[in-house]
Image (cartoon, rainbow, N blue to C red; front, side, top):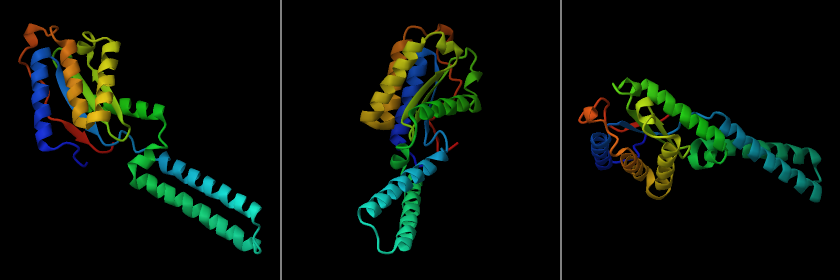
Length: 217
């Protein structure tokens, strides 16, 4: 995928991850996903909208100004309707911002969460000795954030605190982009877990600190 952060930003995030892990005993993994699903229905939704609007426009025009050649008018209306639908579908493929118009909010949230859960398993984040792994995921296309803790961290953070981290990251993403969102999440996580770090977990690094960047599932 196209890299959303430059090398300096990645190095700074790696440093911040290591620092927060030493401070909290958590094993933190940061991830950025270009898309959390392929969403094959979006071009069809765009096609349907483009075709419907164009078809209704053609019908209204014909009612207001009847053509001298009805057969030609019908052929022109059909061709225009199909062309408009195809153009909207193509724009949906080429322009993520346009495609996002047709993405249902609940579907975006569900797919981002499912992607995070799959990544948690595939990257073996549950393999830490004290179950202290935690994933901070940003879905670029969906514009959603997921904070997914393992059992050891969930015991130290209630659901409200986890939702609070996600809210802070979402707000920071709007104003400061992906890098700002991840930094805000690390800062909030460090603040919430500060002082709850078991002494025996200090200095242990069980998971890679490098940012994970993936394009499509």
